[in-house]
Image (cartoon, rainbow over the protein chains, first blue to last red):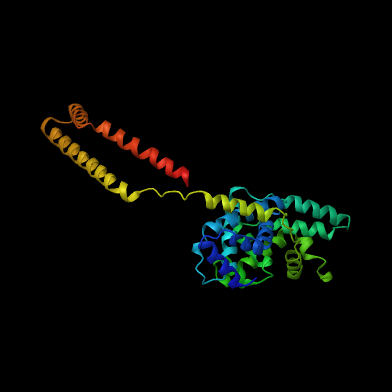
Length: 186
Length: 116
């Protein structure tokens, strides 16, 4: 999976060899589906969104300027597709009240299962305002790499850091029990 | 505390794509490739016609205003001015021109808009 592989395939596709696009799809479908999943938390919808992203990529291959890595261009394009999709049909995520209810019940019984808590936190990310949600999703998807998220969203790194910090505050305020206690375990 | 959020959000499960995903994408791409590219709306060809129509409309407006002012100065604002205006528009076939422009332009625009 190198830049030159992508470049060679892109040039082949632009020269009329459509089959070369299959190599691009095979190389990038896992990360694109997983990124989509983090935006919607629905496997079926994630595949549909990723498929749409590949189709848009195919249509606009000529617009890749080769100044940025192909992956950065592809992720930026896919992120735009996913954001538009979510504006059209928002992701069905757990509501804050539901999350609190789950948290309170579990806390009362002193058995707040890790997996349930983690799921609630991940779904709560989808309830954040879009500009915070996007930063959080991309930052954690790219293994906490600020510069990757900044490149894909075309934002300065400082803005990414500020939004990340604000997003974390919001998450903490929404699920204080789950995120403020049991810290010693980690 | 931040470690807690980091741990939860970075430890997300990986989704395994369905086995037919690549095939489905390629089928869509091949379909896209076999569909002829939509023809862009020929603005360059339409533009002179639109410009002529715009000049005509402006000229008509100027004539109407001039005639209105002349009539007002001569006889005061009477309904006759409007009657004259309608007669003038009828005389040059303004209604038919407007209808023809609309009939030619609107469906063409609609066809190109739906093709994209």
